[in-house]
Length: 274
Ligand SMILES: [Zn+2]
Image (cartoon, rainbow, N blue to C red; front, side):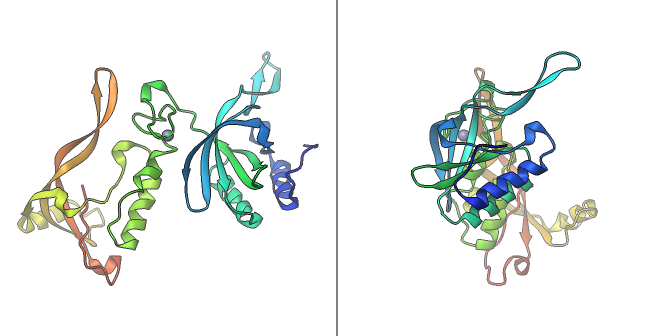
């Protein structure tokens, strides 16, 4: 690993440290000069980062099998990558983020680069390898989706946007689940109370149901009623060979979460969909 420098001693050291500790050719992270990253397309801005999709000209490290006993180090053809550009010159922050990425998603970080105009550092990570035409196209990044009607780069983040229930604790809780969602149909959402109709009090059958679920931790939850959720559960529809996102009005159970468990000052009720 000779003949490169990031221009910053700390960044050089962190890359070299990971390189020294690498145990496989394919897992080596590297300094990626910015000219090796082309076709940059801005996807979104978050508080301290900007996300781009790009093409990495060198391609990822692979091992080719030449014969039964012989293997050789190689590179894939140029490939799609995701760039996380840190809009800060605080090197320590970038290093902290980089280490976090390495811990969370080992083998998905290819290296570090730098925007030569702004001197902002960039973490180069794997794009989802599962992009397929049959999953349809993502309307946000214009790439094929990573699963049916779902883009893992864009959709978890998009789910967290444009809604609030005005209780910070609950917002953070739901958004935490949304950012980790892996498919359209299993996203948890905030359901405004006016999306629920035909609410029926079921106190009388409550006991029975609680007995049925005695194996679950239901102590914090009180099943109080049933309702129709007009907007309805998320489904995937197939229309003339194309898959589409859809909703189906559905019956739901409502449980009341004890207020003191959420936030002493919270006055609202929380609806849980079953
Ligand atoms: Zn996308």
